[in-house]
Length: 410
Image (cartoon, rainbow, N blue to C red; front, side):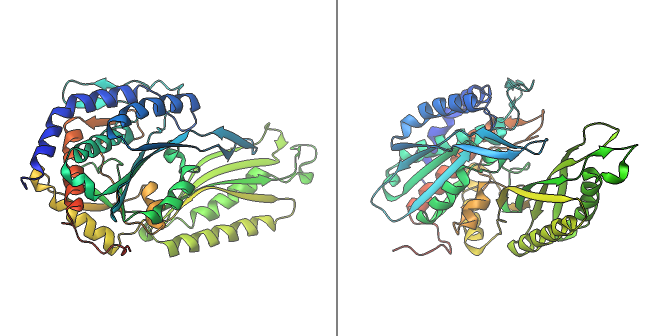
């Protein structure tokens, strides 16, 4: 390890307790994407944790998000507030760091507290995805800001409240911000073996409503037009587009419809997810789905409506990102890490940033497993480990020791 980095990485050795306490405290706050009260509490405690970094804090309320309910009606949810901390200096190199504060389990769910198993693991909602990532990001920046190299790098960080539902509010903000930076660091969890994510599939969340004609199922069945039957036919055709060999994945996750067994149903609703490996494949698949909807609408007495809730582009492994991954991996041996990278089927805000042309290093958060399940856990030792990795990378970046095929800046 270079001697000019050692004092600041060594300082992190004494931060395990603070980082662990953070994750426990934050994990005990339910910050489900639609829990406005919990997200406000989470934002409040995060503002306290940001204070040692200085800088200028901005708050960006995201307004409301509309989704299609199980009854086919628009449903409105109030989103939280994105926190944006700016640390600007009169230098050319600008870095954006960020991760989300929202989690997937609602306040009513029984999985709502963090537990320490006494064997180096924390179990609880969002401990890994991504409250542990928040702790890594903040302590890495605090270590970097203790160094003299801080004067050679400007950075901003964001903490958004809606990533787990596809960033319907903050995604627009991130897309607008992306051109202002040279690269981005995102603190989603590391892969299970501690390695990094190289590329991510594009993703889209859709709702489709089928309207038919209600009628008595026994007395006047011919007057009815079954919305459920029409939806079932659509789903069968949709599933024919599912092709894992080409990286094109379709999952129908929820289906609702009908009123009573003796009534021809006049409404049916389905919600489905689409994932693709390339932008071309995404566009082609969306066109095919549109054709299926048009085909459904040619049926007598049937009307189909397709609604897109979220659409994120694929995050490919481009030359700039691959060069940055190599540079990040070069920081690994100093702290006992032998890093590699692999594709992931999941999406993140890295899709949005990369889609806007910003080279983005993803999965800089801690190690663990079981995300989005009742067995989600975080490896406590990896908090300091990953903070050291990022601090080392930031110092090397500020010292102009990292070269990559990034965009030239004036």
